[in-house]
Amino acid sequence: MIELEHLVVEYGQGERTTRAVDDVSFSVEPGASLALVGPSGCGKTSLLFAVSGLIRPSSGQIRLDGRRVDGAQTSMALILQNAGLLPWKTVWQNANLSLRLHGEYPATTAQDVLAELGLAEVRDRYPAELSEGMKRRVGIARALSTSPHVMLMDEPLASLDTLTKERIQDLFLRLWTRHRFTLVLVTHDIEEAVFLGQRIAVLSDRPASVRHMLDNPNVGVLDHRERPEFQQTVLTVRSALEEA
Image 1: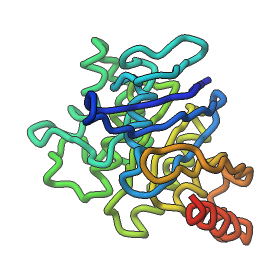
Image 2: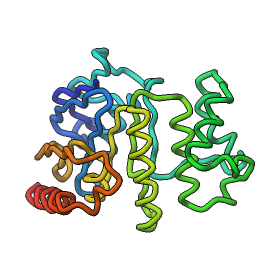
Image 3: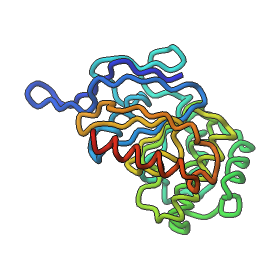
């Protein structure tokens, strides 16, 4: 379980202090998914980086399974907006990078992940030879290769065309359903939040605070987008964002 209590994130010192996250509290049950949606620049990424342990909060607490988060956690994987692939390494080498950094190299795990993501046939190609959608899948493979308990994603599908974005959203949903990692997604895309988040936290403008926490119990089926309740939830989140 992920628990945040009165989290505050600030940058700078003295008169130049800027608050990015203001008194945020929420929890995410093991195996559940939460989408964080808010205006551009509101502090969503700062909040996610604090959860990951990459930045230290100014005040408040973050706990993972009852233990305080103090530094990067090996049980968490982070996927950023840019796939962050090393251009001089192949798909196979990029997918295994996290395992090498962890001091492990179980090749069967990486092979299984590449096959699951439809990348087995391009394992020897370099990033320049891949489409943008395939690059994002390699980034996902790298994150999954360590079998994380928690998956943190920061605008992972930004700048992709609609059809590619929806295909990878479908892939995320299948992976989450199969592996049941805890998922925290930062996005400015309302439909993406509604498709992947069992709960949706609507954040205010900077500094980010939780203005609304909406339940979204219909997550988990691929045809969710075609159902009337999907569009109704999209309208509800849009209205909540406008209020925030």
